[in-house]
Image (cartoon, rainbow, N blue to C red; front, side, top):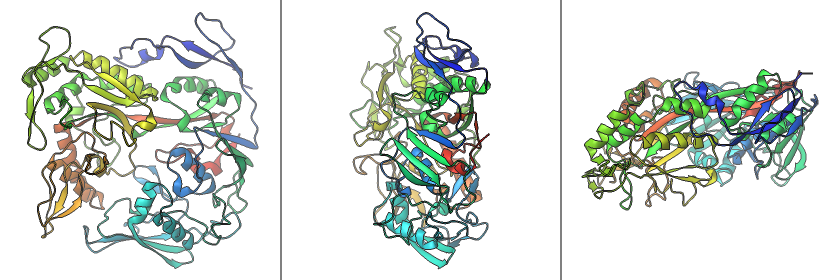
Length: 621
């Protein structure tokens, strides 16, 4: 048994780890609760201690802890990572990604692609062509009652999604499928609608649902994966045992999934044996130093990936009439970029796990191109102040906050705007209140912009309110916004960056309409602006209001083709324009990690998959 047998939770006021970040300036110390590994219980002034004895391992029983249990176990309804983690206990990865460019499947004989000819383009790329995808089932997949998984099961799932079952995303994808056709006992074909030229064509597959079992008799979930559901308590615990018809059989004979209440410290639950594995949803980045200490002492194992989620600051470049257009002038946005020490932010917020981003795309993605504006070696406050003075922002009363003196310009729509004389530079930053990483970034951002003469006022929202119907983010009722996006494995970007309606003339020529305008009479609208507005029900990801026609057309064309070689020049063009306009400041990719007790082996985290993607390989040492 390891010599470290007692753990103490200490309430500390010093954040000593901040000195590890090169050039980092520690913020004002804030008390927080962390976990420390010690040989004995020690008494420290102003420190609260709790002693936890490490529980012994039970080799035939593993408990996976999540932040919550979903209300529905239908795999079509799996809307978040925890729900997807449960789905992969009773199912398998249809098409997933080991890395950005390495798809894999646990259900089909291979991932259907244009390269291996299991997918094919019918007609020409564009509005009049379509993609057909052929899926070939593995012969060793069986439902828990011993019935072989068949193509009809995927047809049944698609039909259920078309009828309104599943998440909004699943339902929308189902509507993009023209038909699903059974070819033989192991093969079926999915035909996408005309004009859908998505590089993720292989992901338009649903389910499966057991078509041989009447819905009234099929309990959810009906398993074809490593485990089957055998009991539990609603909302708190689910009990699983191996699916007798899954091969090879998982090595753990009993698996419990437990929702850990928000009042419970997940690290204490792990060390005390309440949990054997902590899902990423339970772990915030401020817990990483404690986990690393426990890992170094041989008590736990950890694994992490950096990304794909990325943190960013959005400028409201085209606010509604009632808001002050603080950031409508590109020189102001450039000044903010020059003032921010993104290296310090990345280092302190992620404990050195992440580096600053050099584009809105991650460095390791095939479409990535470094943006010169995001590769500056160090902050330059003096140059930032010069740019602001050019616009008309000066501190003439000497109170440390800039005021507007003749600040005016032209919006994306060509209409003039002007900021009232003497207006103080006091923008509102909207961010998330219950995210330790964003709290740290907010603290640094406020401090660094104060050095520029900008006094940021922070408004924090609970994470579940960030995209609510009345959210200030969705309604673009903010000046700055700080949060994170979770992208998919393809570069995509259409939802985030199209700010102008994309139109097609009768001769097939594509163009982007002027900002705030629709297509010319007689021309076809092929894609709407993604700037949230009352007209589109406040939907769309372009919350910064970036409406450069060239950029909108470039990102649309980058996402309207199938092959990377064709798409790459459009992404290069878009990233160049992005660097010139700076509508959003990419900060850094977010770390995502998991932890498990040292007596268990076989866990491995992938960027885009739930922690349970290989649960059948987990075992006790």
